[in-house]
Length: 409
Image (cartoon, rainbow, N blue to C red):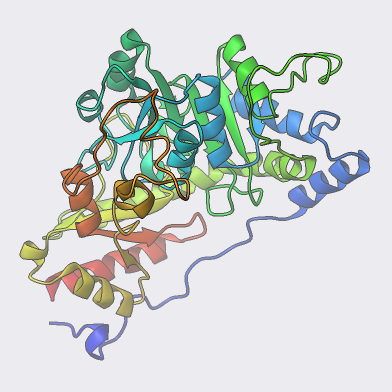
């Protein structure tokens, strides 16, 4: 049996990882043109408008609202949906804080639905178990480029008047039954953070098809000013809203990056599928499940292991894999979002228990251990690896070799 690298053997990963540049002349040209406009305000320049037009056409959407971040995009969708104090919003327990912040800022209550153990996404069944008469919206997180079961979720929510917001921060060019994630719900929210498929440093977009919803979203992203009128200071402001405006420099880089996104996601899909095919039959290894008819864009690659089948702990397996030259980490986030202190203590705002003790709420939401058993099991058995459009087939073959070597040992 071949000696593991962790015990002094030769590494399975023998060649340098494929690499490349994310930015280049197209981004520089767009930035130059933005600066030559002599304004960087999104309403007066043309780059943010051009980026939004291009993006909505790529997704077949009627409207696109630019924002300052993916977190802002979700908050804008929640605000435009009318989420407010006393409402509940259901979302995933395995996600970035960006999926939750807007819920709290609207003084609503985050409620967490359990996940499918193989796709790592919420299902209509797990969402249905959390619906109450206070449920206003659902934020569906398409984790790591893998689409949730949107037909079932829409069939559940639409008759009940529950708004569906798709969190596509990790899921550009992710397909559900031939349709792009982000084009199915009432809102599709995207991120241009530096750690996503494409980047403008930060920034985000909100897609919607309804004109009135678009108007509310555009206003909510800009202090509730009506930029469609002649004078924003001439009209009334009926409620407060944040300033989530995108600037022209962000829009310029985003515009150039949109030309790259299809190729980036196609490359990641090809590499991710190759990896799955190479490790799916190894004992104790359970790759992510991509449902038939769907297509993942693999923002990262996360699999689960069975410690009993492997005869070794996840941490030991992770260390052995890293010694073979394959960087990885046990889990994703350290624990489900509901275990963060601000929810455990029901004190997201220092010194208060708002919005949990609001007179408009009156509910008794709980965040106890075991709330979402599948989510907790996923995080306790998962191993996550980065994947890049610059990786080569040789890179993936050597990763497969490393997995095979460690599993066999």
